[in-house]
Amino acid sequence: MTSSAPLLSARLSVDYRNKPGVLRNIVVEIHRGEIVGLVGESGSGKSTLALALLQLLQLKGAKVQGEVIFQDEDLLHKSESQLRAMRGRQMSVVLQSPLTSLNPALRVGTQLKEAWRAHVKGTKEECLSAIRTALNSVSLPDDDEFLRRRPSQLSVGQGQRVIIAMAILHRPALLIADEATSALDTITQSEILSLFARLNRDLDMAILYISHDLLSVAALCHRVAILRDGEIVECDSPDVIFDAPRHPYTQRLIAALPGACFGKTLSRPLEILS
Image 1 (cartoon, rainbow, N blue to C red):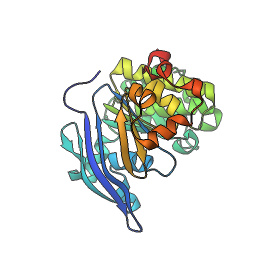
Image 2 (cartoon, rainbow, N blue to C red; image 1 turned 30 degrees about the vertical axis):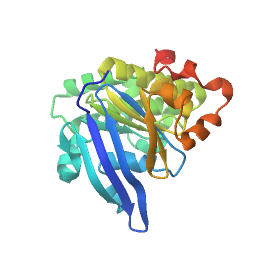
Image 3 (tube, rainbow, N blue to C red; image 1 turned 60 degrees about the vertical axis):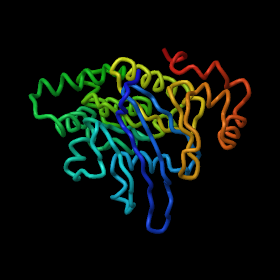
């Protein structure tokens, strides 16, 4: 599952002009083929961390200090053109709502083609082959009828799968899933979690799974980091986080769950999703 050298190693702090200390001395390490969960309540800084790793916070007027070492290179020292070449190809993101992530005016096939051509100059046949492979990977139809649909003709679950297909078109080393299941019903959420587990297993894709849902994190992740008020207060395996949490804040989070829903049954990562 993991190698000795991290795929991503970040040490950073984030300040806004009118809100300093949004993230303070955050340390994150993700190895190749590993799923790391990031848990925290609303406003704790989860999405800020995701945008900082992707080097998108500067567009919001934030100041990022530290380092983000991804595949042995510090992203904080790269130009915007270099970062654009990396985003979507080596590191991709899946956001919360497909309704806001997809362009309502463009057909599904058109949006997938644009995502592929942003990083590859190839033939029409090569593009279509990559799109069909990605759609098959997320259990969606790959026929012309589906590719001609517009986002309004998709269910929420289908829309989220299209977003995931777009994110994995180029087989990125790291996928950041930021609250990617929070807008879904329980059954669809379970299907998407199974999909993430399969992508991790079949493609050896590392995933940073960001959520406020401790139970989904316990089922999916190899390690779990707890974020509170801009600081990671605890990071360990699901067994430790759920069965022997050390930090008082983590203890309160676990205590707030229904007693029958946590413990060793959910502490074994991926087993219930295999």
